[in-house]
Image (cartoon, rainbow, N blue to C red; front, side):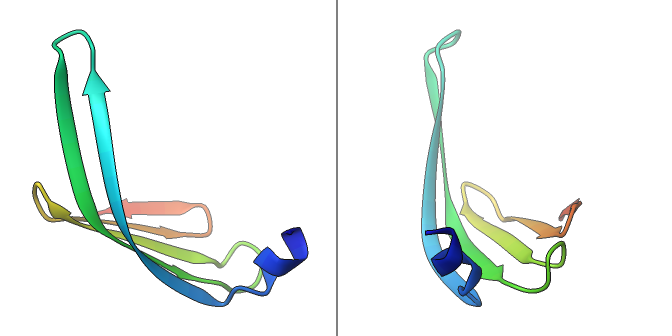
Length: 68
């Protein structure tokens, strides 16, 4: 499985998340798209592009995270 994972160069998928806060019995739902681009160790790129409930983009390149 690890060898197969190393051969993945790119992928894109729709995402949906749901967080539940039992203290206040509330659910937060988020949706968007995740993008992945492989590269040399430490240079892989992941982009989380949320569209709901509000637009937000999170970029991860190696060990650096930027939230827009």
